[in-house]
Structures are given as C-alpha cells and as structure tokens.
Amino acid sequence: MNISRRKISRKKSYGCSSLLTVTHLLILTMGFSTPFRTVRALPHSRTPSGGYEYMLNAVEKDVVVDEEQEQTTKVEGTGPTADETRNEMELETKMKVKGMEVLDMPMPTSYVAETNLPTDAGHFRMRAYRIDEEFRDLHTQRSEHIGFEQVVLYNPKKSPFGKSGVTLRIHDQCITSEIFFSNRRDGGDKFKKALQYVDEHGGLIIYLQQEGRGVGFANNMATHALQDEGMDIGDTNAHLGLPDDCRQYGPVPSILKDLGIDSVKLMTNNPLKIQKVTALGVQVDGTMPMI
Image (cartoon, rainbow, N blue to C red; front, side, top):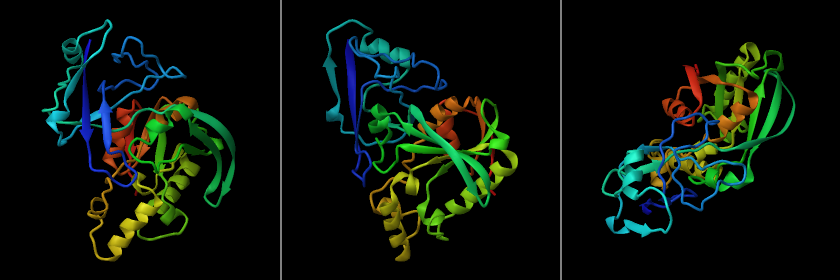
C-alpha cells in the first residue's frame, strides 16, 4: 500500500505548532458519537485506549510548501492503494495543490465533580471536566497555552440535562477583563450577560481555559503593550509571530454528550465559532447575538 506523507511547514510562533505531518487527511462531518468510519489506517494500527480514532477537520488555505518535501513511502501489507484512497476520499494528495490546515478535533473528557456556585448574578451549579490524559498532546497541537480543564455552569431550577435546542454560551477565559476588570476587553461583560441569561431563562455556559484566543496570558499582555505604543490591534499578533486565533473547541461535543444535550442554540457574535463547533459534529439549531 502506498501512502503519501506530506509535511506542511509554518513559521514558528510563541508556543504554537510549526510543523504538521499528515498521513491520513480526513474531512469528517458526522456527530461526535458516530464511529470514525472513514479512517483508512495502516494494517497493524490500533485505536488508542478509550476506543477513539483521531479525527481531523480541515479547511482549504493557501500554504507555501517546499515540493522537495513530498515523498512516497512503501509499506508492506494489504489494503487500498494510494490511488484508491485518493479516489475514495476525493482528496488530491500531491503537495502542489492548496494546503490543508488542521483546525480542531473532538476531545474526550471525563466528569470530575460538581458543586454549588452562589453569585450576585444568581445561584448556579458548577460542573468540572478534564480532557482525558492520552488526548492532551493533541489538544495543545496549536497552542501550549490552552488548558485541559473545563467548567459548565447552569441554573439547577432550569436544568438543561437531556434537552434539545439548549442555549449555550461557549466562553473563553479572559483574565484581564474578568479578574482585573480591564476596559480594553469585553470578555467580562459578555460573561456577566451570559450568567444573567442562564439565571433567568436557563441554558448553560461552557467555560474554556484559552486566554487571548489561545495564545496565553503573557502573550496577550505583549499584544497590549504594542497597542500602548500605537500599533493597531489587528496587527499585534502578526508582529509577534502569533496566530490570530488558535482556540480549540474539541471538548464541547464530549461535554454535551455527557449532559444528554442533542442540539444547541449558540450565544455568540462570532461566525467562526459557529463554523468550528458545527464542524466538530455539534448540531446548532440557531444563534443568539451577545448584545
């Protein structure tokens, strides 16, 4: 069986992945609970403990690739040829076509604990999750600053468990505005509004540890310093060699499955977040803007 192996080189940035090696490039659109049937693995490969196959979602993006890095490896065994695999997956494997950038993949999580959370905004239940250990390296493939633990907040009087069309706010950590009350970021205000909504109407918040869109707290401060010097906010990340956005939403499908939630209505102003969550297999019935 001939397998094309491609390397996509990228400029090294602060803690973000600079080299991706893709043996099987998959574009999967099924739900999280569906077995990853489209995988064409090597004859002696096995699923990791836990029974999951690694799942890659990809989008077309112009990537400069050195054609000399293209190579073909001969592997002994049975299975489809490289040509057959290309036809089945409808993917061009030669490096002269547009590159494919790995975005995100479902991350299996485990429930840890649940407790009461009394706040000025209302009384909530706080439920903690943690990404399974064997999947953590994959979770941080684009940024080493993304945390392994997630929190779910909900109103126990309006429990979202086992329901469909649940209003969901996927909230990314913002220390500067949530802890230090900075006015240069609006994450704190959005979090308060989400809490108020869940208290009054139900739904839930999934809180993710990915400060500064995944680049980390210190790097985020570095972008603020450049803004202090007069640089436009849209140019600071690129100036530091940082991606604009390396957030990962892989834990979301596993958490929703644990809660028995079949579909959601996303509370967001970000079309890219909707696209990423949908690509992970989450059924999004609609959206609600953050006003």
